[in-house]
Image (cartoon, rainbow, N blue to C red; front, side):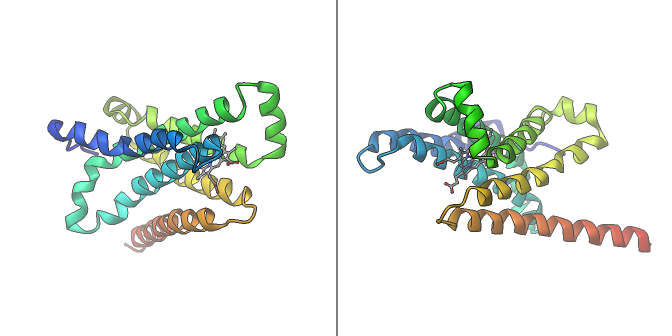
Amino acid sequence: MKSFWNRKEKPYVLVVFLLPFLWMFCSLFLGKYFPDPGKLLMRLSGIWACVFMAGALSVTPLMTFQRFKILARYRRFTGLAAFFYSVLHLIIYLVLFAGLSWTWIRSDLVEKPYIYAGVLALVILLLLAVTSTKPMMKRLGRNWKRLHRFIYLAALAIIAHLWWQVKSDTSLAIIFSSVLGGLLAYRLVTHSKRLRRLYSS
Ligand code: HEM
C-alpha cells in the first residue's frame, strides 16, 4: 500500500484529528452542564475511538468510487486516531475511574465483564498501530494484510463492549453496531465473491 502524503497537508490533518480531543478538554470546563466530567470524558473518548475506527473501515468500500480514492492517504492516520482515542479512553478509566487502584480495578472487572471486550479491541488496535509503518509492512509482506484483517475482530469486540454495558439507553450501541456491523457485512460479501470468482475460474 502506497502512502500519498503531501507533507504540507500533514499539520492540517493532524489538527482536524485532534479537534475532538480539544473539544473533550473544553467540556471539562463546562462542569455545571455535565455534573460527572469523568463519565463524560469516558463516553466522548469511546465515541471518538468508534468514529475513527468506522472511518478507517469505510475507506476500502468508499474507494470503489473514483472520487474517494484520495481517502487512501488518510487511512493509516484514521486508524492511528482510533488507537489514540482508545488509549485516552483507557487512561481516563485508569486515572479518573479507578484512581490507579489495582484492587478497585479487580473488583470492577468482576462487575463489568464488558471491559474484557474493550481490552481485546485495544490490544488489536495496538498491534495494528505498531505494524502500520512502512518498514513493518515490508517485513511482514503478505502477512501484513492478514494481520490487519484483525480490525474486523476489533470491531466485533467493540459491538460486544457496547451491547454488554447497555442499561436503558441503547442509542450508541444501535448506531455503532449498525455502522461497524454494516462495514463488516460488506467485507464478508466482497471477500466471499472474490473467493467464488477464484474457484470458478
Ligand atoms: C482497555 C480498554 C477499555 C476499557 C477499560 C473500557 C472501559 C469502559 C467503561 C468502564 C465504560 C463505561 C463508562 C461509564 O460507565 O460511563 C466504557 C464505555 C465505552 N467504551 Fe470502552 N473501554 C475500553 C476500550 C474501548 C474501545 C477500544 C472503544 C472503542 C473503539 C470503547 C468504546 C466505548 C464507548 C463508545 C463507551 C460508551 C458507551 C455508552 O456510554 O453507552 N471502549 N468503556
